[in-house]
Amino acid sequence: MRALEVAAPWGLDALKVVEAPDPAPGPGEVLIRMKAVSLNYRDLLMVGGVYSRGSAGAGEAITPFSDGCGVVEAVGPGVTRVAVGDRVATLFFQNWISGRPTLEKLTSALGFPIPGAGRELAVFSQDGVSKVPDFLTDQQVATLPCAALTAWRGLFEDARLEPGDTVVLQGTGGVSIFGLQFAHAAGYRTVITSSSDEKLTRAQALGANHTVNYRTTEDWAGAVRAATGGVGADFVMEVGGAGTMQQSLRAVRIGGHIAVIGVVAGGTEGVHPGALIGNSARLQGLSVGSRDMFEAMCRSIELHRIEPVVDKVFAWTDAAAAFRAMQGGEHFGKIVLQF
Image 1 (cartoon, one colour):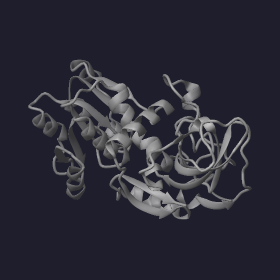
Image 2 (cartoon, rainbow, N blue to C red):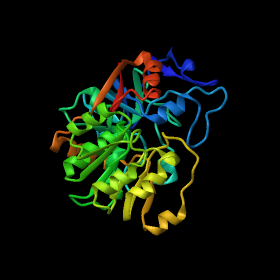
Image 3 (cartoon, rainbow, N blue to C red):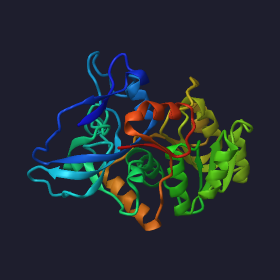
């Protein structure tokens, strides 16, 4: 089989396709023939040699990508969750089945430290894959494990929202677009930001109630306040990090919830405790979710017939070009690699 690998000195130029032996499943394991994988910002950091929980050794190569769709080709002894021929998604955290996050659960992420889904054939624990809605394409399924589940957990597992509440989604990347689709289906009022009027028009077609171009309206928190009669948003999906946090703190209502899930805007300005205390807001870090959450999300996707937005598709062997498209902010929704 062939697989994607990257090692020091890291970077897109170090990403290559290599030949590797065909794997075989052991007890409790399944062999998956991958059909598609999707890109997350985390993958770009990984390929660049940056990791959230330590770095690979100087001579250690990694196989990237956490998010994939594939078909079960063989099963090892004792496998009961899936059968040969089933279509499944890989789970971001292989050991987080249910309950609260723990260090053990959060150190079982695909791509690093566990070899990822960027290979033609891959062996995973049966606990690390889940069946998926039949009506979705392989490319759409590949978008679910990280971006969709992150949005789902932020909105429905961690926050206490009710129909009619106002939700702010930053940007039009994968998590925010899933957040828009989920929030619209749940009856929340949605505000989405972007630097592109074209992307904002596309967001309106997905149900966005209010849109803000943060390039022409730098004080987008003021626009959120105006849209909510001065009250502020009940929930903010914070994907920018330090570069946007102060605006989020100004946009959220008293007692509101800010889900911190990304750092794409960069910046170095820290959180002002006074602003957080002053409006009694809740600021919570969020890192994907459990298998139980994933399967609940899939049931909702099937019920509401929510179709993930796949904006660009590349051959899996052309992963570097896909990452460059991500770097350029060209996408609306998700970028996918096709096997």
